[in-house]
Image (cartoon, rainbow, N blue to C red; front, side, top):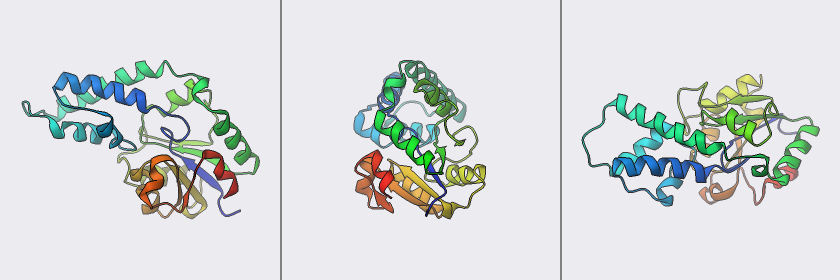
Length: 211
């Protein structure tokens, strides 16, 4: 077998939380008097919270914000987002994804999460995957968000594997760039297929079984 482990991004790969991110950022953008729409929201995929705020503030024309205030706003957005996540349930985990994960594990592969989100464990609990993955590398144990490769380097370290032994599954350009930067092969799904950066392009999550 070519790989010993698969490292999955969470949002947009295992489940979809884009709508909750959008709603939470929209509340904050409206408060700041900044235009925000779904096209801008798509630029935030795979990007850490503070970097996402920086993208939103590109259109900000008010009084310059201190770093302390920016941090406070990012935390405010996260609290709104966490409240919205309470609406998630096991219905947000598709049968295709769960069956594919189970089959990959049955093949002897280790499974991990590599996400910039600090809410990964909350989301996994909501969708019924609490304790399912061998390791979780997320925004709580990294300093730099994607496209920096730190999150995937940390994941391979936690798995006690070399990067060459790991395959990353991503739906965002920043995630693909992060995987490639640390020498990992990567499989693109969703919009990431159009980036033409991945080792493999997936038409569906279950395509992983044929790699």
